[in-house]
Length: 38
Image (cartoon, rainbow, N blue to C red):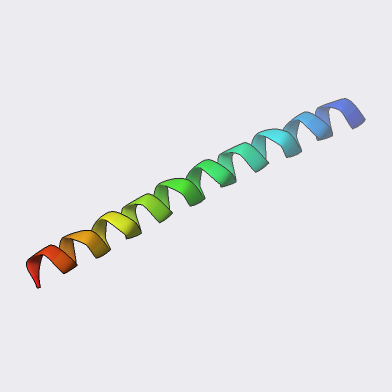
């Protein structure tokens, strides 16, 4: 049980980090686009 929980926590951490990176990149891209347009 403990091993499974540890693996699940590790997977969730990786998934959340990937989502945050994707959202940050999207926000950065949007900001760049707005600057180019303006």
